[in-house]
Length: 310
Image 1 (cartoon, one colour):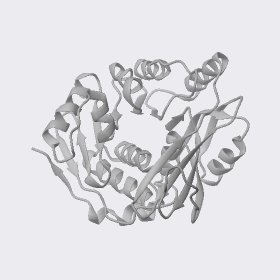
Image 2 (cartoon, helix red, strand yellow; image 1 turned 135 degrees about the horizontal axis):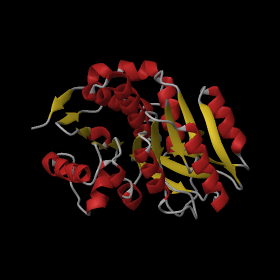
Image 3 (cartoon, one colour; image 1 turned 180 degrees about the horizontal axis):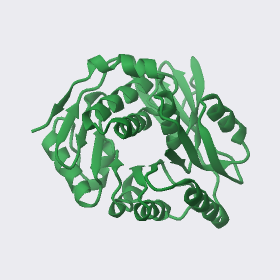
Image 4 (cartoon, one colour; image 1 turned 30 degrees about the vertical axis):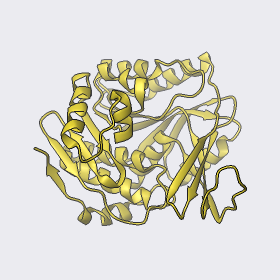
């Protein structure tokens, strides 16, 4: 069974303006909301691809109904710890003429110590040997900074496959437990190592990815938007291009990549097939208002070429 973990759910409010001007009144020409949070996005894409998934995590009590309704419509099973407060709203302003996006991430609930203990109990109750847990996104306010490390260690000790899509020290803290997959994008990778590599500097990027393997990661998937992706596995390195299409919304694209990779690999044990689906899932969601459907994901596969990097 596949599980996703979302500790900081979000409502993404996307506002489109012709040309965003800082410090002035800007008139929207379109706006819409996307219900999610990284782990929820992962669960929805897995469900779309035909891999049943249960979404776990925290959920703010004040506006929980929106999330419950969304997950029910998407046929995603859920087991959340309800906490006092509301789930955050992130505002994303898209300036269409210059193709620029400005983000403002809102404040969320603050889980109590009892909430954290209850969450760990849920994980220990739900997860069993050979299950897969996908840990995605940021920690909410006042959450123990080592919570992901605690969860990762539990997974390692109980033979539960786990995947981590997080940033900076939170990601690094999980590596000693040997995650099956981590997925930093290129900007996050550069931030980890205080570098500034561009995607065409693949040799240098692969070197950084292998350093993360040395720290414990089994496989490293590095994405760079329209430039493509690099997959580093224990025995090989693969590079893939990105599908072409009209960018509508980048929210959930990276999460869709994680879902496509994990679901496909668990079903096929084929790294290249997993990378292919991963790239197409990410691209398809970028070309959609929400998480893309399977039909669009499959239609993009003919555009993608996976090659061995030497």
